[in-house]
Length: 307
Image 1 (cartoon, rainbow, N blue to C red):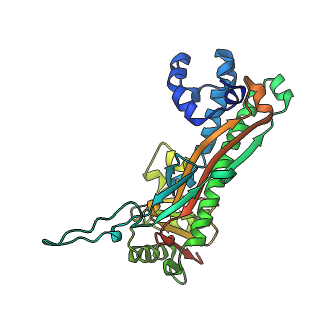
Image 2 (image 1 turned 90 degrees about the horizontal axis):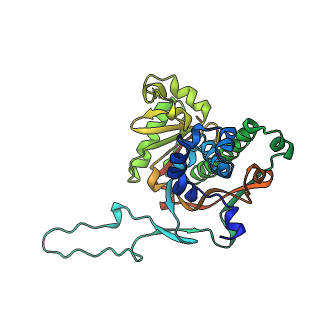
Image 3 (image 1 turned 60 degrees about the vertical axis):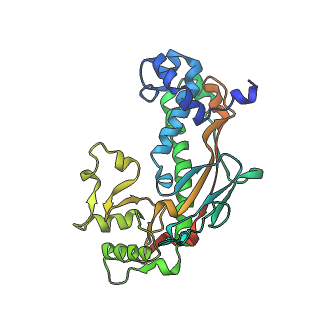
């Protein structure tokens, strides 16, 4: 294995090795601190670093919950946007027309070639932190780095939804309350042929919805707190409701997730330029590669304005 390959800590590698590592350690990696990991096996500190990075990303992972995530096996992919309307059902003895996957229906073109779609952020840990074994402070910084990537994804996806929601699916709140505005917007999307399943709101609008007796809050969904941790604050009319300040204040997004935005994931979050043990954090770089596009001219996306 080359020096360069040893300096990369990928999520794929992490998942492939995690079971073996946890069996060796006798407890979950997430339950161990940086200091405990150093004591058990300093060579496995990179596992804890990536685990902490991913844990941070999970705290802000709204973006990937509101789009259709598909793996990209190559640098360019064509994702079908086929719907029921692409088919004709024939009755009686009339032969059915074959709908070919080779071009009868539309596709979304995803492209991460030639450096496109690569996102990076660098983390520099002071050498004296390492010398003084400030493990808790290091963990806080690594976790924040993971949160930054997840939040950046969310901002990009939600901004794209707001921009691409067609005029036909745009509902002005007007004199309505927030619940009525969402209901009307859902009706517009249904007219486009899609059943919405996701709502994205700003925390300001969250307060308005939580005050309504029709809104089921997170306490009734999940007493463990996982719903709140992932950004979901409740459900409304069979839709998952996510609250994030990545959503423009005064705007509420309603969508059918699988037909809204497609995220083509070529390279999941990983750490490069990393060398064991903790010294690698002096100049560690985190990166991921993906492309994202709105499918079906945004017909599965709607928005409520003036909320």
